[in-house]
Image (cartoon, rainbow, N blue to C red):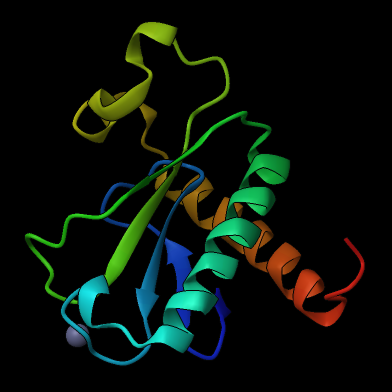
Length: 129
Ligand SMILES: [Zn+2]
């Protein structure tokens, strides 16, 4: 849905929660410790821009970020918009395993598309914010 020189951003299809996205490296590396400096700098920008876009599109106050890489040894991060109106007792890391009732794969894809559109606009007007 969105690409920069070093990163791709798209819906986290395997989880399917609206507002949950993956950011992954466009070339193979096995973790952030071996990503080059320029790509790391760009990751920071992608993280900031994508978090901002998710807040606007989903209407959430929080976007969580998780990096594991146990199953997929390709550098990636999971961005999780905290669902608006979520029971505060479910906030935080427990969402990583307790999300089945929040799944909506169709909406996950359409939110990702809307976020991608905003990222594209931000890229075309880099000095507008
Ligand atoms: Zn790879």
